[in-house]
Length: 280
Image 1 (cartoon, rainbow, N blue to C red):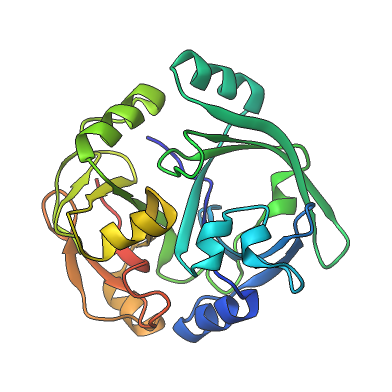
Image 2 (cartoon, rainbow, N blue to C red):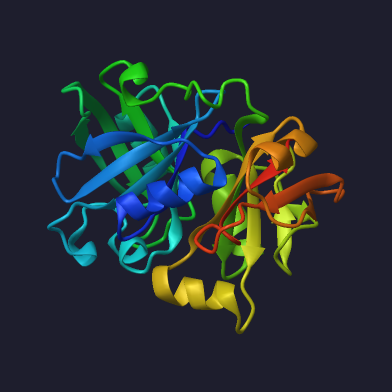
């Protein structure tokens, strides 16, 4: 099963993103500025070791000049990129090239935490410029615990980790072929969920939402391109999650429609960040 290392949620103001997260019950920890000096981030450390990264331009940086996902940050678009941890970024990049996938990298990257700890990693982006359907890749050069640890306030919560990344795409078939060619994901099947044309890849945390001729998904793709449009954090007790976090009305999710899900109850997160019962 494809294991997601973390997902990035972007906006124009990090303090605002952190305040919204705290409002719905998600504790955050400031992670410091990236090595480019144009973005900084905060972490929501999930119990299984994965995490939600909140990322925004630094105070004196125009969002359009940000080193990561400038279009997403400028548009306050939320979901921006998803990441896989690999043993060797260079080897993974070669594998992508062998499969006919364009790569941007490997790159050396870093950030400095408020306690002065320097975090370093190698990374590589895959796919056409501005296309975030494929996950970017990361390999730590410092211990992964420098990058993230589970938040103590969430360890005993109903949250478990990441349940699903939903990708907004022009055509499900074309995107499914790309994901199969690169990461051997299975053929997606029809699924219940909050988007009209939704399919999930069985046994993986990936779902595809096809944009029609109009509507929010089409507007999103025109603004920031294809790629993540929503994240669902996994919970092992949906009723307890509704008591612990600020959530909206539940909806059915998944291949059989038997998993309950809900968006976090804030306009910045509605339709973009929520929870879902874990399942196949």
